[in-house]
Length: 400
Image (cartoon, rainbow, N blue to C red; front, top):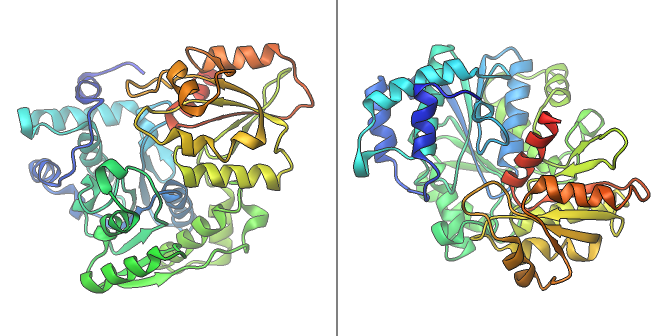
């Protein structure tokens, strides 16, 4: 993607460490004339599944005739993936134009926005310019101090609570639950699929905020038309339907049309490759996500048949991510995603107790090695451990 002035400004901001707080985002929105007040909002947090839930909700609302905006993160290949309007990815030219405007009002030094903050306010400005009626917004990290929490959502969703970003949100799961519950609003409904002991924590926080929390059970009702695989998607889909129904009446036809047309790559995504083994791309980057992937391998009859390309960020609990996959895969090739925070494959081999694992410099070399080993019985090669690694694989496929 060629960089104009606005996109160059964005790239110059990152990558950065997480900078919790709302003041910089609010200042930028004030400078833009408060585009966040121009639309209604569904705000979605959670350790896993928040992106899938957001994608489902946006697709369903669009199918119901609502002009919908979708904001998610991170992107896999192109930064423009983060913003959709009526299910169409925003153009690089439009994003560049808005970012150029943001660059002119941005502060400097400690007042300079992070990459995520600049993208967040740009998404809201794009929604205003496109006359979006409902914005479906995925929280970046946590909730209470995430840049997206400048919004005043009509409906808030916490998909679930698990161990991720403990260094920012922790130190305990209860603390993480409270941070995510920071998106609840007084007098407004909040939804969750959490079923464990942390549901009590979410209920306590809802009472404190004056919100009405509704647990939503998973559903199999739309399994026949859902393109996203894995039993964990039943909970995400149920949340999306319930949340979308709070914004407009939904017909069965609209729900089914929205579910059938949902696009959310990199989550148990099967990719056919002519003359070579298929790929299974999954962005599992925390223990709960890896357990969901492992459960799907068991359900699909692929356990102990697949090979694995694995890599992730050095600050992640990669040992716990790898643990449920270890007994279910044959050969393991370790690599590094294209990210400055990536763990070196040799260090990763030591961390995982897999000195036998082949270490490669990137996903292209990793796949080339496994391809050279032969197609076997046609079982897929899994690429997982980081959304950045999945993005590398998708970028490689696009260039092929």
